[in-house]
Image (cartoon, rainbow, N blue to C red):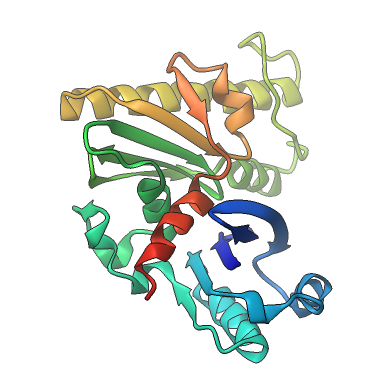
Length: 245
């Protein structure tokens, strides 16, 4: 049995994995006290069957908290992805210290010698990662959709809180529909434009993989053909556990 976790800015996903298959998923908030939530799942867990623990994290304080929690439960070391020798799996052409370990996990998950990928992740930020064969070339970070929506409603007193949904028309007839249209069609245009610019700059073709909460909304609303993968990060961690001796 293996415990794997993806610590994002907003949410942390913890998975129990057996024989490289996800058998349970646990979602908890990344910030705030969470021991009582963890105890609900792990108080009766048989830690004697545990072999490895691996996290990718963009919130160091949360990783420290979880590391401390599992240290009380087991002698198995709690690893963070970037502690491992990832360059044995992936050539990394960026500043290693500044690239998020979740983005590296995504790249490890789907990298293939003779295929190129753009990974589009709708998280707290909207990120694009460029993978040419086994070479992680870098990426693009855009404002996250939810974060941008909240910022707009918080800063503009006449704009209410709005849930984004698919829009059939571009021109809004009231404040809500105008904002929804701006975000929906604005991000659809951003996505297609950035992917086209990546193709133009690299002079290569790519398969596009999308993940994250808003991937459902945009999957059939952009010109770019995409494949959806909600477990891309965890599957990357599954592969990376082979590096733990």
